[in-house]
Amino acid sequence: MEIRAAVCRATHVPVGIESIDIDRPLGREVLVRTVATGVCHSDLHVVDGDGRFALDRGIVLGHEGAGIVEAVGDQVTGIRPGDHVVACLSGFCGSCAQCLSGHPNVCVGGAVARGESAPPRLSKKGQGIPSFAGIGSYAERMLLHENSVVKIDDDLPLDRAALVGCGVLTGVGAALRSAGLEAGQTVAVFGCGGVGLSIVQGARIGGARQIIALDRFDGKLEMARRVGATHVVNTSNDDPVEAVRALTGRAGVDHAFEAVGNTTRSAPSVACRPPAWAATASASTSRGTSTSIARGGSCSTRWSPAAAASTISTRRFAR
Image 1 (cartoon, one colour):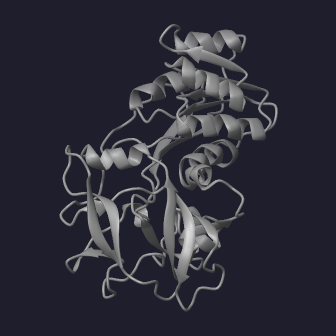
Image 2 (cartoon, rainbow, N blue to C red):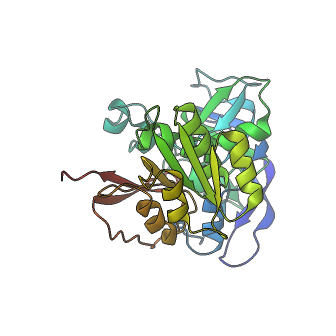
């Protein structure tokens, strides 16, 4: 089947809309008509030359997609044509050590991708074209493994649901899972884009008593207030560290989240924490960047194999 897709073939040039071929669903695959897709900074990293993907064959960008299932392979059991689904960039096999230990988001089984000997899912003139994170939502249709989609209720707006595929799960997950937020704790969120606003919502859901949102743009800060921030700080006007300390009686916050994707913001987020603690970085950063933390505490950076999102995980040192 011929479809149109946004294909990136070189860095620092506009992405082109091309006609390409998409295969029929095999085995446990589903063919999804794309209704909506988000625009994530991770896709821009590829265009800017900061991605980790080779472009010798081009790549169909996009990974925050939602749509309606049109066809399924003969081994699919949980999805059927007509279902509304969200594409999930953390597709899983369900049988590897990571999946069986409760961490399907870092699956190493590789079952959601087609093998090298199989025909490509996407191609042009017989040459296979990769898709970003195995999804490629900047296309009229997506061909995905059934473990790379999540069925949703038909009455959920697909243009909202698409954002759950990356930005929402990254932000809400950072607050409720990665950081271990507990009810009654305090939170600072640096950056109020899609991920940052999702962190604010996750913190509200988790019962944080104080949620301080920090950004340079008043419009984003107003959105942060609407979704749960108790206080906002425009960092163009105020020093972020001093503002957070003033709002917390000089104590600092229990959890500080960096959601800008800029390593220069990591140090201020750590400085908002009590002595010997650190922060969680929940935004995508470009490949090859590093973060230096000159403060007490243990700090390590992990890279998500699915989304290249860095997380700074920390432990408190005993005094």
